[in-house]
Length: 374
Image (cartoon, rainbow, N blue to C red; front, side, top):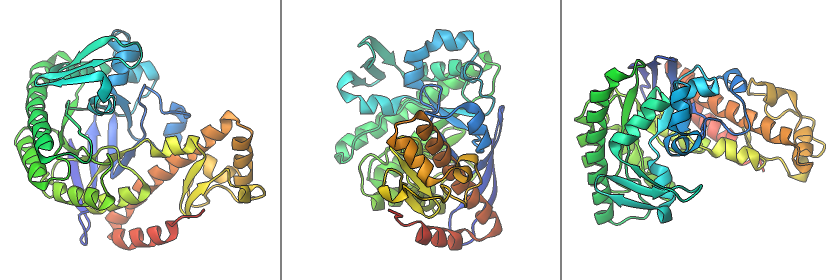
């Protein structure tokens, strides 16, 4: 599934290629988040225009709406939403983590109440794989237990043990059932352990002993200091085999992504570019722009001349500010289009610089220029 093409000679940054039935994915890659079968405020045609190679769906939300019956009728989410490129689905474990008042964790799975109507549901490792098989994702994730930061060593250890058992159960069910599904799918394990390297080592080494297609670093970007996150990422990528893709879940800012690429991560997802876009914050090659700021009232410059995209190059900051002040929906659409184009440009450029042997110099130059514009 994964081909490592080049590793930067001065860091752990790497360029690779992921192969799926719906196409190849050049890494490092940023994956726009389409929780409910849609990336908010942007359509599928526009996602292709800006170079999205893969998007995310969410098992928890898709299970509740539209439901497995609908997805089964359409032979998968890609047909349902008219997306013919690769799709990754997370396991729903993070949503259960974030909805802690509505769930009860047991040794063999998670009982939870729907946040929509309060109905009772059950997620076991096997059922989560089954749901993702119905969704038809090219890459699916095991059910895991993500815990809050800070967490005690004891609580983190219990979560690691449970997640590892669930990983094995997920893989066993996947191997037994995959012949029933005509589509080739891939299953990733998730490393947990909070800030404790001893637990991270146990989690990843036990998962790596199994025959997973890739490995994710989970349980980060949940409130821990940035330095701890970088340290755990660096530690984790030393354990994950070189010939397997590495996915840092739910991270993050442009700085986070570049620092993680330097530490050997291949795949990223985060709601930040779309969520912040809808709140009027733009990510540009010159730094962040808070478009509602009055200083942009007469600004004729485009959003970002460095990014080759329709929204970035064809609309002035003044016009975009007008759209937000006037509460026009187009403002949300254009800002989302731009922010995702920026994130995809960032990882694409990082890949190009890795292949040329110029990654660290470019990263340093970019971050010095990036700063805070506002």
